[in-house]
Image (spheres, rainbow, N blue to C red):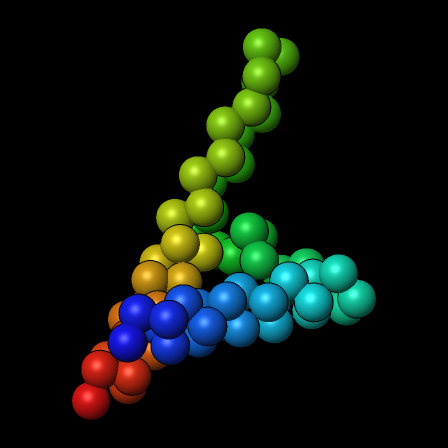
Length: 69
């Protein structure tokens, strides 16, 4: 039973990895959404991808609920 889920998880990670490698323009918007906080100072920078992580959480919740049923 666990091997099936590991294979599904591996495929789920492989597909975005291939997309990032060969078509990085598909995800160029990620991290630049309204609500993502990016602060630059002379001492360094701070980046908090609040909206991007909220979007990932919603998509993951939807997928988990679909596979759970």
